[in-house]
Picture 1 (cartoon, rainbow over the protein chains, first blue to last red):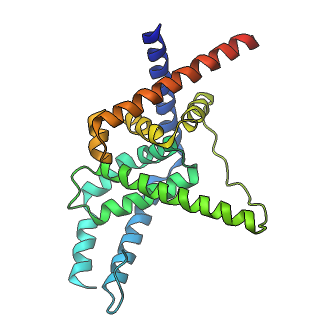
Picture 2 (cartoon, each protein chain N blue to C red):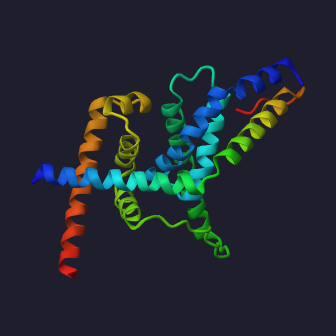
Length: 57
Length: 176
């Protein structure tokens, strides 16, 4: 009985988790996010290198 | 541009980081959703955690665990800020906020998310790591907890989820 409940729970969690990932893969724009991340990293680093400007903590 | 910035750009744009980002961004967003973040927060926090790992790329041994631990810290910070904001909102009238665009997920996903949301945060966190394939020992290492504590959270979380599952199935049987 107990192992049956464990099995049912694991199956449901695995299905939902896989389905959620699939939905996210169709809605999240990874390439745009990556380009934006590099832009932020460059800006942050350039700002930190400006004389007299503190590096963000 | 300084040599330091040039070096950063060269390191920051390594194929290894880009490959990692592409392979893990949606997984990290899912981790945050399991943790209880909204879809908007999850995407923002994932990006913030990715920026943190990019800045430490050379020193980070396990980017998957590092971004998850960082993302959880950022999420906790937002939660406590939002609690403070809610308390402030009680004292001052603010116009009703428009809801962000809703992204719909499959019914089973919604149901699992609701079940996870009923768990205390420490149990939800252990479930989020577990659903990403981490073992209790790995979770303990990544979150600076004792393995026994992680196992205990996991045991309690699973017991609560099974209870809910049994309750849900008896309710749907009664409705039939």
